[in-house]
Image (cartoon, helix red, strand yellow):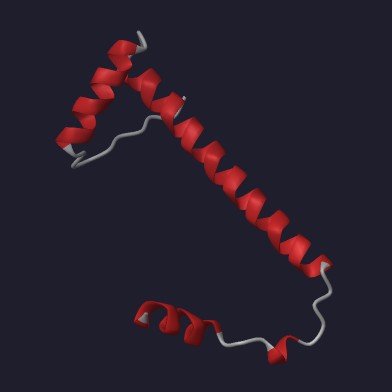
Amino acid sequence: MPLLQVRDFPEDIYENLTKVAKEENRSISQETIVLLRSALNQKEERMSRRRRVLEEIDEMNLGNTDNFPDPVLLIRKDRDR
């Protein structure tokens, strides 16, 4: 099994990780693996959701988008309110 070493690990995160691992009756290594798996799965889910939204937009057949307002101008106008 590969070995992972992290240098300059922030102390506050390490303390939090230790606390959570203890609460879950896991070693720090086990808890790290659980948390990394969860985070990586969430990232995949977000990417899948984005892909799905983009596909739905494509299916809308919006036609000529040249007449759409410039998003930059809309954001600027909103911020200036």
